[in-house]
Length: 61
Image 1: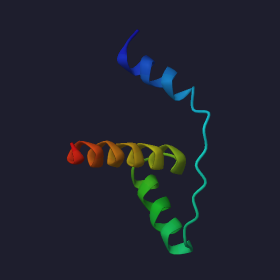
Image 2 (image 1 turned 120 degrees about the vertical axis):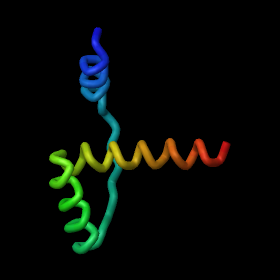
Image 3 (image 1 turned 90 degrees about the vertical axis):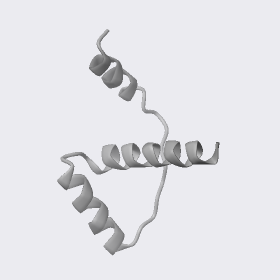
């Protein structure tokens, strides 16, 4: 299986939710960022959160 197919297959197993409250200004900022990246807000936020979590955890090591 190619790498892109593996990624898309893994994304289909997204079953957990995170509820997040933000201000109107924060929401507008997040929506601008995801639009600029041509992603849905959910996809963009998941990608950014996972990248940042990995970065922070690698700094702690």
